[in-house]
Image: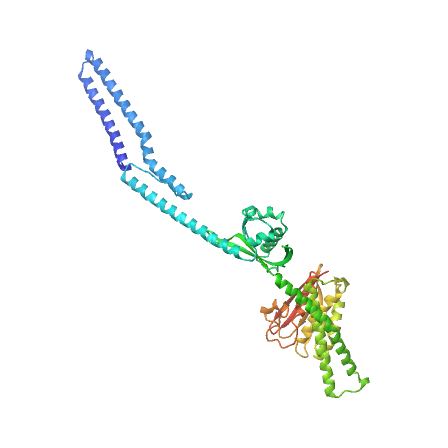
Length: 486
């Protein structure tokens, strides 16, 4: 019986009871009025009429109360069961079934709901199965990779770790999977180092990418070097926004490359040391040849002698740069700082480049504040070398009869800026960072050079906790800025 039929029957029963009660009252009243009040039959009729009215009234009230209690429940029960079934489906409980009865409509609703739940269960089971298979494939691939891989979720729990990572971390998969990486790191130095690096990577994520130094790991009775890379895992939320859900840490084994790099550095250092002696002997011999006291040279001989001197000085400069580079790469760069006035460094750079400036008719101007400027606590030899290199570059890249500005200024109470500015062709903005890389030469540059000077200069400045930057526009020249703490 459907809801409409139930309501119709209930209303019909109530109406019938009311009509019956009214009819009984009317009949009883007619009987009483037709009987003499003093007649013995009147008492009996009155008693019988009241009894019938009370009995019929009690029956009507009982049926009404029963209908009031049962009817709403019988109407709302199917909807309650349907609502509970929907809630179970929302909780991914696809085994729920409905058994509504009472009408064909309810039975049809139950059958359709149960069919939907069964299909959802089948789909869910097949999806889980595919996910498990996919996860197994991915884990197999990751385990087959020779490089260590560590996966950490957004709660800093170890989500997955491959066999190579377990080996170098000296851990067991069963002991760490799903556990807090921070707790494990308290007794594992290498994992603690990786977590610290991950935190620093997140800080620099939106800023300029921070250079990550290789880490040294001692495992299997040998030293290994690894380059660490942090890959954030992002997933789109319901609002369409990317949300970070974890981090994958990749460790690339660069031990062989490190050995080759050390061998290269050692080789360059040895060759540079060996070359300095014969180059110095060549320059000394050239000076003797050019001395008029030993005899005059004809124009061709003078030209050859000058060519020997220029190329010898260039070779000596290159070997000096190579030696400086090997000091930086090998980590044996030793600073001998002492208090120095900025003007002393500027004067040294100007004197070192005076011959070159005169040769190209370049006017070197000095901008130095009249007010007192703070002294620097630096290795004057290293910083003077930087200024000398910057001024030499400025002279070489300036047009003949041009001018170059070298100077210093007080940036704030804690920093002093030294700068060298030329008015040559300038540097394309695309190469403002590349020019500080080793051996890099701006495409189209015809002026000879090793491509090491700016790289070594930046290393020297950064060793003093300073910065070396460039401001340049094509056609307007370049300005190299050295900022040092006082």
